Image: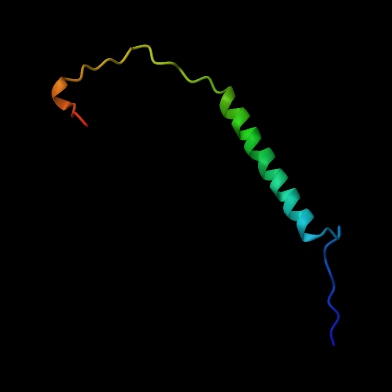
Length: 61
């Protein structure tokens, strides 16, 4: 019979490891959202207006 050595230094259960990974993923996405929000995208200066003729409309009853 061979002895198996655990190399984990913290000894955390698998559930706590999953919770910690999930927490880091949530924090990562939160930081990404904040950084994207800080970007100042230019607003369009030209208004877009298109006239649609009545021929394209279909009457649905």
